[in-house]
Length: 419
Image 1: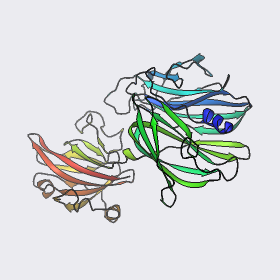
Image 2: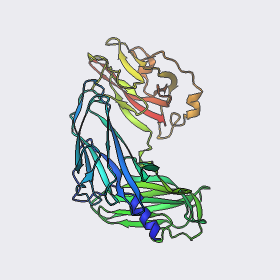
Image 3: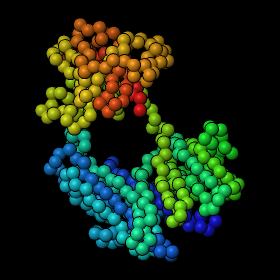
Image 4: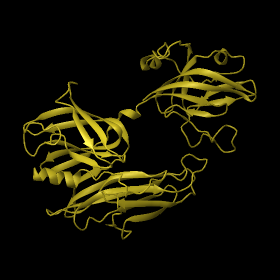
């Protein structure tokens, strides 16, 4: 049990805890939910490495207002030794266009853990990816100077509904275990429920209800006595479904025994509250649609002086030919196929019944779809078409309304993208 507790402290999970002492979030903050640094008594050392990349579209646009901030679990600043930036709790960074900058801890001192925030205070521009910094993070476990394990750290995401795979095998020591941390992201008590389902979809054991106090973190292994309290000789493979009354952050971790010692892998939950694939969208004449996301960029139209579609994977442009003539023009290798008119009178109708299999069987072309004043496609609400996006996805689209004004006609679209 003591070894299990050590594993939890060291490898599980210095996830972001939103205490009152924690800093206020900026618009572009990215949270790294686990940073580990220092040495254990058995000689193992931990070093966390951050790779920051300027992905701005403008080739001459440096980033000068980016800072990597380190925090302890309670939200107070964490002074940490870094390889090139000294001992500090805040590392300001200047990154030239397309440049990558490495920041890494030294792994000296007693083992400790916390979290980090990558803060970007650059202003926004009309280019959607200008002044943008990305970050990838992993920590290394070293024996002396030899790396014995490398663990990727995903950026955290708030959720109220998610699932992650679970595997437990305690029939032979040291055992295969799934650990987790649940962080309450609100300043009040929160109820979290966890259900385990085996690989044959049957529910395994009773539902676990956790009362997580204000801005606190619950951490452990699922088979632990304070959680599902599974028998000593348990072999289970399936999934955990997590639901909460208010937002939490969930970070699962798999502990796998090997001949050289335990290996750790952080897992990324499937965020069930982020799986919605349908949307209602306004497509103004002269603007383009990216059906993969889906999104319409309100800065860029075909009338702008710059190449409006160079920096984004647009699929179709609602191209204006004249005051009375317009067309939906495929872009960047995307293709379209007309489906017909679907005037549904209920929430579930023939358009909703169109399946991915139906779309796969259609014939697609780069030829534009006519939406001129004399076209039946514009005259009838309910006209539907399919898009094979330039990323290879399929979307079905229906015109719900046509909005006519003095400058032309705009479309209100129902979009369902298969992803």
